[in-house]
Length: 367
Image (cartoon, rainbow, N blue to C red; front, top):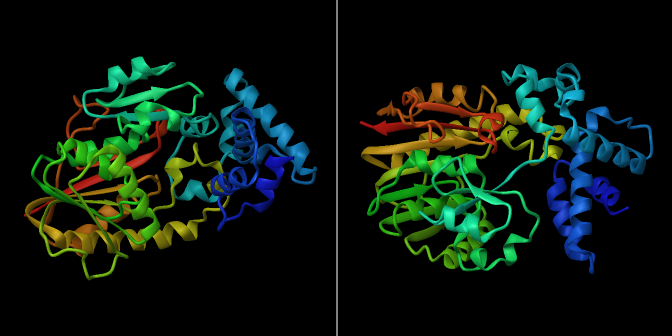
């Protein structure tokens, strides 16, 4: 069974989603229906691992996991909060995250697929796609169909990006203006970079950096498809030597993190992430913020984002910034999902509230 092969190869250094992609590339002739079934079986195994008898054959465990996933989808009320809280996440999480049954119930459901339309085109994009609707944020589109969106002309012509709704909220908090200079310090493959460019009307300048050149290559390819031309890319590994001497109107540090906010989408990570990882990453996050703050011009804005929910990587990092980067004052901003609520300089977005990944955002201004 292909799903069992994937699980047998997956470990901390070989995430299940990466092993899946590699397997699908190597095995020729797989239909889209079969690849979808294999993917769902693999993710169901990790999502329901706490319910499985590890002494049984892996194929039997997979069958049971798929049954549990189907049962939860059809009748979630038959699964008690008590058992979900006890089995859905590792025991160490309770000391790091203040969570309730609402979060755990969200983790056990299949994730939603979000698109980001080009500015002002969400309603048109939703009309073009079957089983799609504009909602939540200005350019966000929720897609519930099963078509391969990468083959759609809307995607190939750069009219939309696949981007989680919580990730879209980060760029809205940045609120870059046309003509400004921004630095996306941990740009990865460029999801937020491209959103910043759209919000800037493709004017001004964005420096996009990452420690991996392969990610920057993908970013440049995505930018070409989206016709975002106000970008420059450079390698930066978080050291004191910044990639540019330019002083910026804004810096976004979308820092590497433990990723607890993505555990609905990436259930394998629940069983490979440790409390030790959280401590190590919090130290990296503090260092990145302290160094990136040096690129701000007076009045410039620093935005910190992590797709995790742990105390150490969220409030803990923010509380340490005053001692690490003098000259910053907290900057209150509106919650993109609830603009009528009072602005605040920190925001924790829970998956059960937004329908997307968990996300923490904080902001400062250089005085």
